[in-house]
Length: 217
Length: 216
Image (cartoon, rainbow over all chains, first blue to last red):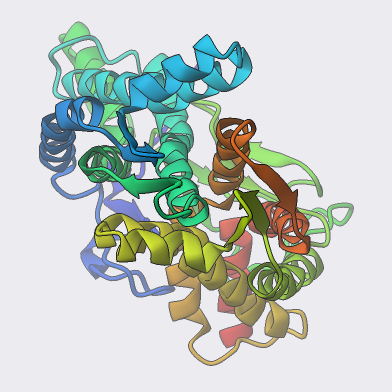
């Protein structure tokens, strides 16, 4: 591996976030698609941390408050995300219980922890190890949307189960908080810039070699 | 022209080879043509830089057109019918969003509408609008703006997640009532496949290179 591969930032070049064209950043706007040009996503860490804090604030209500209320012949039962999963487990519908557990409970918390770690690595608090963390970032971006499945279940049940006094499902306050967690963590993942990890590694490598050979090119 | 003659690839804008920077580590590369069906990877981190999809424009046009037709079917025919205690209720994408808005959760209702109706419609319609004319080497008016919006919309298209939601709901309702699948449901499953094929059908760099060449 050649550690001295040229980076776009070293030559003042920015690759467009939207169309990928590489242009000198002094142009400010991409000549091909007209989007604003940046060397790195603007205020990446601040935005990611802010969105993560907002997501964390909603995390407790999302899991404590009922996402829906099921009323069946006078019996009113509020159901949280966790109760929904436990219910499937009790009925021995294990695959579905595992799907719900992974999509609704594991992915949001893993995503928040991963993004906090990525932010810490990008700001130099822990070792960047960009190869592994880059993989983790790619994974969080890919998986985040699947947490929305519980919100869709609520919307489907609310639309389908409308039998008046016999059986009825209404959305609960937890659903809004949960949807908020999913959308906020998606935005947090989008505003994080994985190139910051490699920048940090570059700084570390520069610090390790005290006298870099002057004027190699 | 320095292009390798054995490689079929899309037309490049004047001044090729153009530099391309890795989106994960910012390493600069010359965007050399790669054989059809393969991807160019970053020298430093191994992430995919760009891909050369075979018959990309034809595929995207065909799949996005099919997706638009399927969307019509999904919304015209019953999706899922439930019968309990002699009463029938029907599920459709519109109803899934509308009932939430009616039952006092307008914010989630609109989210569901955006993720399952608006975003897929923008994606399929936009890809057809951009790639259809490109088949004949032309850029549709405003194609750049549409192509920009495609990039912003992509993460919010969640029809495959909605389909998983339908399956989970079926398991939840299984014992309570009789459920019937309608034509709409099968159209929705096919829609999911078409959307995935259309989105994966063309690389972003290829789309923008072709647009740039068409507008020159």
